[in-house]
Length: 191
Image (cartoon, rainbow, N blue to C red; front, side, top):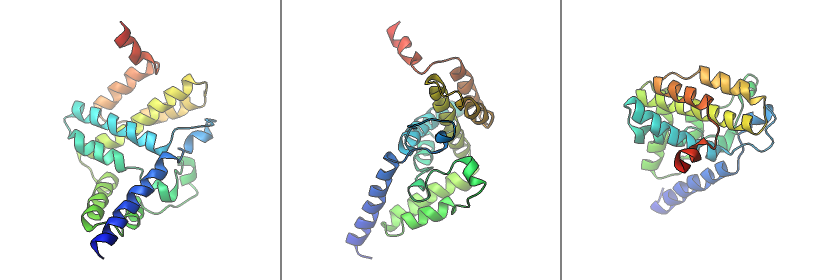
C-alpha cells in the first residue's frame, strides 16, 4: 500500500471511532433507561477512572488509560451486546474485530492498536486488572447516577458490578460511592 492509502486507512479508523459518540450503551435499556450514555462517554470516564486507580495501585496510569480508551472500540462493528444478549449471540473476538478495523491503517498504527486490544483482552498484568476494574467501577457509578434519576432497576447492576471488583483501590472507591450523590463533588468546592 502507498503512504496515501495508509493515511486513508488510518483516517478511516479514526472516523469510525466517531460512531462511538452516537452509539448508546444498550444494556441500560434492559433496566428501563430511555436515553443511556454513549459508548464514547463510558470509555472516557473509564479511562479517567483507570488512571486514578492506577495511581492508587502503583500501576502505569498512561498504560491503563490507553487500555481503557480502546476497550470498547469494537462496538462500532458489533454493537454493545449486553450480558443477557451474550448468552444467545456469539460475537467475533474483539481482537479479530480490531484487526479488521485497522487492516488498511498504517502498519505501525495497526500493530499498536492490535497490541493494546490484545493486552486488554488476554493480558494478566496489574495494568490490565486495573483497566478491567475501571470498566466495572464506571458501570457501577453510572448505575448510581441512574438510580438518582429514578431507575430503581439499576440497583442490581450497581450490586453485580461492585461484586466483580478486584483491586483494593476500586473496592475502596466503590464503597465511598455508595454514600455519595453525583453532585456531591460541588460541595467540596462550595465549602
